[in-house]
Figure 1: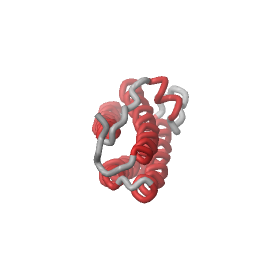
Figure 2: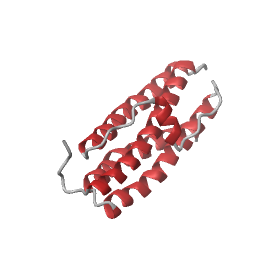
Figure 3: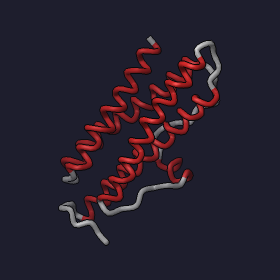
Length: 157
């Protein structure tokens, strides 16, 4: 059954494309955090293990919110790894156990998502008249990524 929530089919389709690209970015970052969580080595292993876990747990909630929003506006959420990799705007770097490199990679990803979400807020709200998605992007996605990026910048000094 199609959603009749005051957003045209054309607009909701365009918003779903935007959200599925963001969903892909979130999934790639989530996987990167899990990788770092599992494979970090160093004198502060316990601290970094917990830090990475905290971030990927936050991302798991964001991922669910985005996927459910796509369904709310009447479209299907991407759910296959090959589809995520075909639309993500993030890079998969080489394996590393080096804390500074891991943190720099994560910071780059958070900041890439932040810059993209700022554009997506205007596009979904103004161009496609979807205030609900613009609100989700502002109140959940942007705020959480800004906070996670700040935490990483604090580690990097």
